[in-house]
Image (cartoon, rainbow, N blue to C red; front, side, top):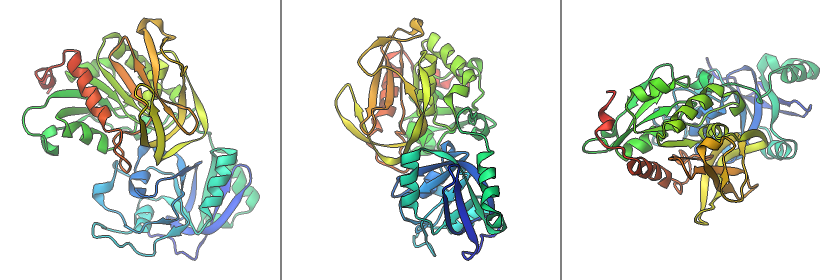
Length: 395
């Protein structure tokens, strides 16, 4: 599919009736989803290929987008996942030695409808005040419909609350990421089973660099399939959708916790751990999306600048250790909080080998303040008797 000409009209329509008119970008047609904003000043390619953005129309708050083009190496998954893309100033041409094509062409090739030439600052301020909401991008002939018809299409779509999306973005078949392929010399130290709920490609790389063999499994994998890998630990990834719909993953994780297998989760995995322990989850007004989110480790007082992408959070007490609502799991504490709005950013079990964080320690793109969490999980596996011999099982 060829990109739309920049003279073609396009319009962003929000469910509260607000409209922003601009010009076509990427593919032509209609894109429906939840309008959200991402505050990263760099890493637009990693953003649009992050599966956690499935069914969302992403507003880039950075004004100039596309200046470094696109390349195969920077993709975080097998395709672009944003439902639509909203930018202010689209680069007329890329200028970077790593560029293999233009962002405009890549959006068009993958059928992603976008809009350029709109006031992304005004859109962001509107979403900050009103919250993330249903929206649509209409370009070319689609943009020529009446305002009433466009608004009806936007309001008629399903909301993000209640959406079950992890299975849609997950891999269909298991695969393995080997430490030797990422600079590790010698035998693997450990192996883990990583459940792909919307896994970013850099996450298994961060494990492999540390000598951990990663068995990536589909979102619907059972406890028996997890243990068949012979893994020393279990990891649950980031991903899109409402954690209230993840009943199967919650039940599987409870089997992992009951077996006292070391566990680490990020983002969606943090929310699933919260649910497995008996806590609730809720939808945030506009979410946390960007690579500049301040988080405090309550145990050390250290502040980390983190990369985040989530619209839901865990509802857990922040005032020290408490018995988990599912009392068989013992005591749990909130380990990290957001310094912007005090949202729960991490959980730590005190009587189980399990912890999780809401943010993205692999940080592609983003700061590397949180990379120590991969080492913490390795230490956890070592402390619970995992050996390099177990990492050979199931292969």
